Image (cartoon, rainbow, N blue to C red):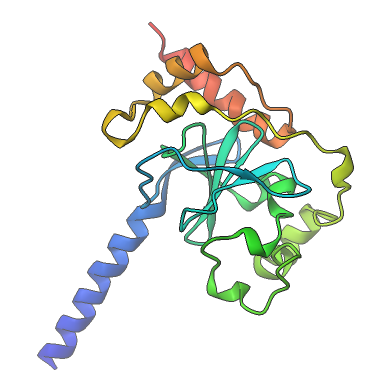
Length: 208
């Protein structure tokens, strides 16, 4: 009995540890700051997904994308967004993830979750089936949008190659300052722009 109790205590500790790697902290505009348990040591190679204005990182074992000036990852069954390749990351509610990201075919997920198994590789994940009827009603037609009318791929923020792990600016304000000096692109997608504007306001408020 004592051994069984110890096993349950250990499991509780492990599960708590895992949960902390992707825990929302504060919210705003459909996004919440989150601690995500991944580390990307160098700027990744990014390749355009054929037929989409989205890049993916084929050499990373992470579901990692770049769209409309921002990075997106699907990790631990949730979506996160950042303006820098290794975060900090912001949790994006399913209702706030850009449609074009949701339409990416299954084959471009480098670490697909188990429930993707058996799904058609050239079709998008079955998000309606996964997130439920309420989400699907809120985002009706998400998988039928005409991609011929969407944006061209945004320019990559190649300046971030200069900042590998040992030089990576972890402070958001410093990231913002570097970005302002090197990357003038502003998002065109309304859902991406919403997060971008929230981020801009946050940094401007921190200025002396």
